Image (cartoon, rainbow, N blue to C red; front, side, top):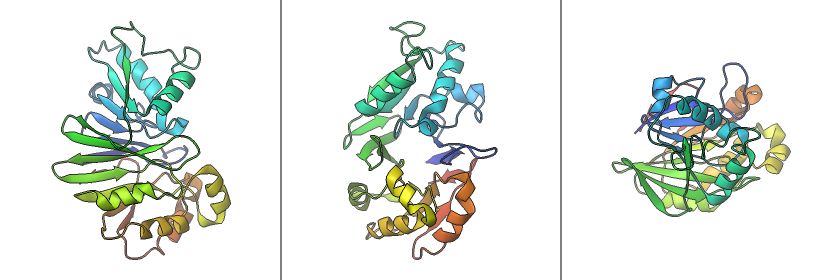
Length: 255
């Protein structure tokens, strides 16, 4: 499983892109950064986007991707996959013919640029060579993570989340678990804001990782606010007995 980090930050500054992971050539997890990184040829290969939640830094580039592929006369729709609540929010607030054209009806309802597909947490869906399952998380809006499996290996992408229980229980039971991508948005000095906004700090991450008993996958940290990246890096260094990596935009990870 090859994963390309198109963006991995919790907000945007020059040289810091918002969240999006490209798996292989045709599957994305989140869509914060796509069109400023991928060529038109690469964009045309994308078939599915799995959305963790409807916040702008995770969905923004669906709009520009839809616009780009519309004028390339692509034959099959781009499929946006998430829970019903998250899809309803994206349709209502983004593709609403006010903020952006409703590409689920353009050029026609029978042959649209994008198509919405509902996934229910706990149910596995086969996408090409991948098996994907959504899991519920704890954030300020409806949010899910995704377990992605291929050839006996599994990776978990935890979207924005504060402390949670179910996700770690599921992780402990996931066969072939090789890696977990988990957010650490803010430094410990902003723990009160992190609690209010449903995010993790290095200290709360350390507590969460203690729930991950019996398994020791690679831990990839993302969604840091760029202004606090170095502070977070120093605080994360205090977490022992875990293989923790802070990822960068453009990085390629082979699982």
